[in-house]
Amino acid sequence: MQVDLRILRFDPERDGKPHWERYQVQSGPMDRVLDLLHAVKYEYDGTLTFRRSCAHGICGSDAMLINGRNRLACKIRVDQLGRKVSVAPLPGMKVVKDLVVDMDEFFAKYRSVQPFLINDTQPPADGGERLQSASDRAVYDDTTKCILCAACTSSCPSFWAQPSYVGPAAIVNAHRFIFDSRDEGAEERLEILADEDGVWRCRTIFNCTDACPRGINITKAILEVSGAIVERRV
Image (cartoon, rainbow, N blue to C red; front, side, top):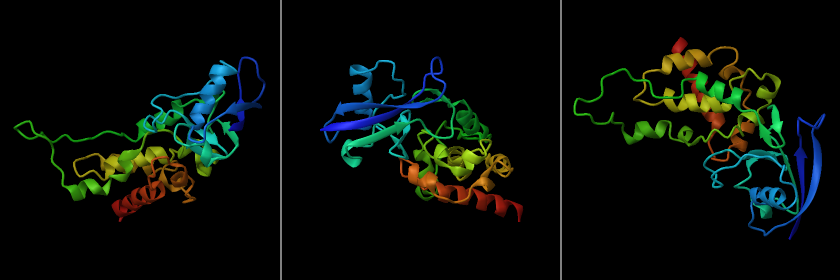
């Protein structure tokens, strides 16, 4: 079938502001939006710029605003969208070119919550692993699924209003270690997230949960972190 594809284009070397360009693209019903973008780049305009890598919903590099919602271009199918498809860069982030946004600040916030295991206790003498029960692992299982696509953070009105907000993705990755029974850095992370640009900027709008391509209950994770901060201060 023929798809009416609109793409919000912006080349900082020649454009004063973003503008829509329209393409008529042939597509099978099971094609993904990423297939449509490849068709435009290969057959119509090689200057079209976008990120993609694995094309299987794992790397998170091709998150975009598709028909008004943040999604992964490699996961959403044409038959789920219909014959009219619009694609724009993630909202609330500086556009580098076309569908590519600047991710530097996003990853700086991710790094700020210390998203790695902190444990100064000596490992087992036999060189074995730090063991964990299945029930302890289940506590943070949901937040291990994050692929750092930024779909959640860039769908958050609190982030749009206050870009200094650490954002849902950073909180999700902090949650993954705060509730890990093997980790010893929870206090430091909770202190980081207790400031004015931390968890208290969340307004539980659920945009982040709705946008997550991995199905993570992000709002629940944020509330669990804020609950841990409150308990820590009682």
